[in-house]
Amino acid sequence: MANVVALYRYPVKGFTPEPSDVLEVLAEGRIKGDRVLGIRFANASVTDHAWSKKHEFIALVNTPGIARLSLRFDHQDLRLVVSLDDRVLVDQALDENGRKRIAEAIENYVLQLGDNPLFSHPDRLPLRVVGDGISSRYQDNEAGQITLHSRESLAAVASAVGDADLCELRFRSNIAIEGLEAWEEQSWLGRKIRIGQVMFEAMIPKVRCLATHT
Image 1: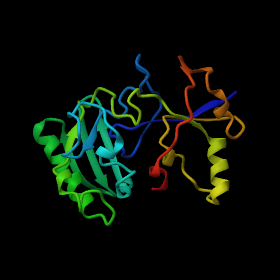
Image 2: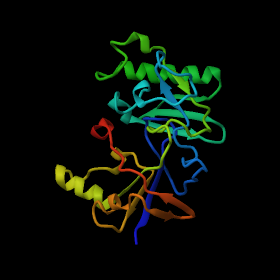
Image 3: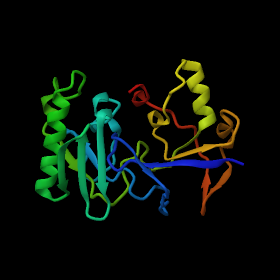
């Protein structure tokens, strides 16, 4: 029988994860507190609270340098802290001024990176912080969905690419399990799976993007 060995949620879309001891699954099939905020381009095609594809946000897929940033989000007080190594870049609540300062801090950091999506696209500025900090809405798929992988499959990838230290954080799953054969979870499609107190349906293999290269 497989065992859960790690749980993650990602308060800000495309940024570093928040390891958790417990995850709460909402009725609509999303993780509570997961992807509740995003840093969106000014020229995005949708309103602030609407879902959109990742390419309208600052995210690992287009800004690999944000992997160096550490985030702490207070889900009760709705306050975000962004740090680089031991230096706090911004520590603000999600009021109007706080959102502006968070966006400016991220913008200033990203513009210093050699690989960024802003330098030749001035129409993407200024950045803006979207989301209410409560509603889980900015997953890669508009329907939400919760992602899972086994550490045996991770080990198979690590062996294939010759990197014994390959980290599962590259794949940005919500749930990591172990106790299977490599790739066994791929055979679960269409099955019901109980994890804790929640019954899940295995729907599709999740294709991963260039964020895995970061």
